[in-house]
Image (cartoon, rainbow, N blue to C red; front, side, top):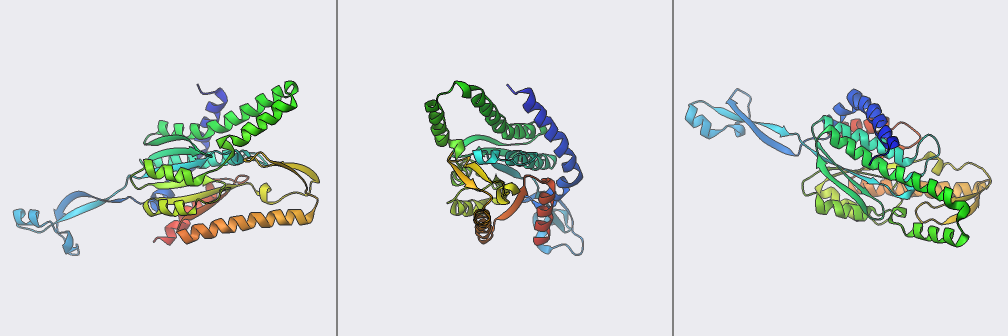
Length: 323
């Protein structure tokens, strides 16, 4: 049973992204992602300038005049959204979290695919595969995809609220045990390699695959490269600028949302802030270099900014590149 809040969020995303798809994205998407081949359409009389290799010699012999075969692009695509729903996506410093930005992005891509009569599927993952929805067509199916991306965020919010209400009655031993269990929860980890391996087992036909994550993971590049040989893989890195631009706010306790480990740090220390920012930049540069060397496109989405602009910019840059 869907909660009223979840239904409301899905409808809000449908209204907001639907207008953006109609105005901008559908045409950009259509011009960038081509079909997987050609299919026969008809034969017609030969006209000067036609490629002689397209002449249908059987029809020509029967009709006593040259005819050529006409082919059209096989337009239908399969679009797969591999969406990271691990705990680190819950982070959000301003109006929305990284997960909410990933959800809006997923909605834009799903509605653009459906508007062009393509199939769209969804794979939710963290430290394990949480859910797989096979590719299908239709507006209702696209809304289901959006709903399922939203659901883990709503559940995690409810869990945090329940924990807070139980806190006055919890002994310290129970609290520590809860932290231990959370640290072992698959949602506390990210395993992109495993998600890509699952994709290759269940999706046999070539697809356009969007891997949407903050990419706080290691050891997945070789598997990503293998998947890209069969599919058209595009990586979408969702981040929050506050993760990279630490404010000088004194002593704070930071928690790693995926491991559950905590650490008290002094953010008034310029040396610490610079070291953290340098580490983040190095990780981003390493990801960009690895993807570029593998021929995989990268889109970077700031959760504090609108989602549609970087997506359109990517479509247009890719269209120029493949002209």
